Length: 546
Image (cartoon, rainbow, N blue to C red; front, side, top):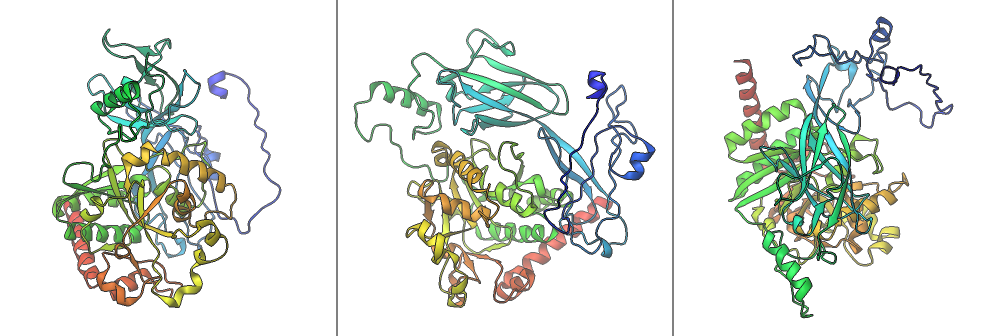
């Protein structure tokens, strides 16, 4: 601010005089530009990012951050918290950033972070009623490629988010929804490519901080009563049929009804998962192999890149090439208006459930989530084609055949028993999402609203990714998947293991057995898969050296 405004600036700090928790669990250093010898020695402020006239970064530009005199005997996690308009990930890291025990390390830990994207985010308002046009589909691109990515407008504040970088971008309403809405052409930043096309919003991202935008949408004449969220197919013909039905409806209850979309077309099964830390990335490599080994169809994996290590990101394309599957990384920035979690595990749980409607391309009709620490023995094409009976997603209920752990079934008594009102409590290690249904019924908006209300209480949502959908199932219904689709030693008897189609390496409160030991004892195929991924990893390392 001092440099930008050319004004004297005084900052008054008002730190809390009381410490809520002892010992301290978080240690921060900040890099806000400006370098001095004193600041480098203090380790709190890195140097500013400086560029040459040709756009290349000057040597040493960007400085760095140094942590000194922190706990050496505590298990630490390292991460970077940047501005809300940034998507940042680690580029170079020689250690497991989820499990840093400094007293065991021979050298200091050095990590390089990179800015992956500067975001375009903002608020979209329907100026017909001053309400967010929930579900409105937006596309972002440029002159040569108008549809590089897409998203939808949330009902939560009309929020939308798209990945970008410095440059000029074109934001438009997707063709299907362009039959109903158009961008208000009274704004100075709105342009028309020609007289026959709808207006587009021109957005200039002029800095690395991204861009915030208020997008004004208006309904086209005659479209005032047409809903974006009717149960029709997600095609241009479907929207036209919707419009026709809304105008010429005969009152027939079946008018406009379509059969539920199952796999969403094509012969590829899409699987979503996430992991953080070397142990769970190891589990993830084994889960992938077990899925591909037991599935006759093509498989495409979608991974959240926010928490993956640089090594895994380099490894997974090589593994995909050798084993014959596809892979794509997705990412999303936690919105500033949504109650933020501070512990990394709870942040990961949040990403697992809160952004399913916006995390994937809108063309994707269905996704199967599988925890990293699972081994799959069944053909997941069965889940891909399963009829969810109108529910937006399907989960497997906790099984009850292991009577030794009856005392740990918290959902069978007290608050949860009263809240569930006879409905089962489901496990979140595997679920199937009908993304078309999920988006049309605004399930994502509902889950985020419920989460925002409940998470204000720190004692609520102890198992965030699991408690949230179970709590909300009276509003967002859950289809109960067949029991054999998830076996867990804690809750299921050993007699049911031979018929299990997936085995989850969940924590057993009775034995407290490490997951690696449990995997080797329960699953003969686990060692085979583990040796294979180690060989691929070794080969990749040798290729990199060569």
